[in-house]
Image (cartoon, rainbow, N blue to C red):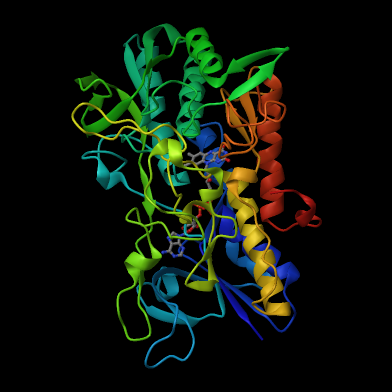
Length: 485
Ligand SMILES: Cc1cc2nc3c(=O)[nH]c(=O)nc-3n(C[C@H](O)[C@H](O)[C@H](O)COP(=O)(O)OP(=O)(O)OC[C@H]3O[C@@H](n4cnc5c(N)ncnc54)[C@H](O)[C@@H]3O)c2cc1C
């Protein structure tokens, strides 16, 4: 009998747990440790943030699904990993702190044979003074944040209805943020809502981003063929910003947010401020705080985790200049080299380097998007780890491990630009590979035939269809496993 423990019930961890429940032998066990009682389809938080959806439409309770699938469930935060056990534990184990209201604050321990770390991001609002819902700006990272953002936005819309001018700022709350796609979507959804409310003329909408140029999205931008001509995500998004009248401030590192004002430094070294009535600024991501100790109780945190807090896996983390990195530097199996029974997937693994060209202001401030690990790759990695663990359990550790590098993986992303069955629109993008491979695809680093972008109403329908499809899949309804990640 083997026990697989999955840390994190988000996109990567929940996908891994469902596949494990399908593939493991009856005698084996899968247990999810996650602090949340609800699963959240995070991409649709954008629509909660503009009042188009309710939290109940983007969440569901995990416990009944896990009960039905025979998955163990501990509603708790993992705090410590002991990959070798210790003086009083023969086997590897994790320490937990319960968030389950019935056991809140209690300490627990859980032994494992295989571990999947899918703990996602720490929303690091603390990196920027005054950033976030506990400070002076809104967020859409969680359903609760999104409800708060929607209320603040409605207040601004109400003021515009009374004839007051409003400045609405949407973007990134730090120079090293990732997830530009989400901020981009939210900016266009806000613009759409304001237009639908008939008060567009009274709104100055500003997109404040750490991207060097629009359309970078943390992946160094995209080049693709459209109607027989090559175009770029820069041209494409710039034209959308122009069409919708959204002003963009690029290459910006937010240094602080106070009541009604955001302060930022730009890549040219200038220090600027912008007064706002409503601001939704995403935080930078870090790894969640986890400790790790060896058998003797020695701290092995720096061996297991990068300084960012993300877990180091089978990537090449050698420091090298940006133009010397190669697609092969990216992880293939997401296994921790020293502990092959530990995998880190989704946002939890440490990327070996930036995908967007790193840039620094003359004052030495790094202003560069961090590499995104979006939903589709996160789900694929979760399934991959599950598949490899099942093979290891059945055939032993010497089994050939399947690989799935982001440098050999496609991703599709549909960025909503406004909700509505007749008037909605979305920017649909596919890229292959996610991490450019300049040896294989000289010039753009990606296959022109498999990289694609399109804006229109059809994109909104696709985004809405994906919302229902992924909720269906995550609820493990009949045939769920046939729906791709
Ligand atoms: C506003 C927003 C919009 C987005 N839109 C899109 C989109 O349109 N398309 C797209 O592809 N991607 C989108 N993304 C990105 C997508 O949400 C992430 O790629 C995806 O959620 C990553 O999956 P994950 O499992 O790594 O992390 P998560 O889904 O965040 O899951 C992490 C889980 O770990 C749990 N956890 C945290 N700490 C611990 C701990 N100590 N112990 C145990 N569990 C822990 C968390 O509670 C959570 O359940 C968006 C992100 C945001 C913030």
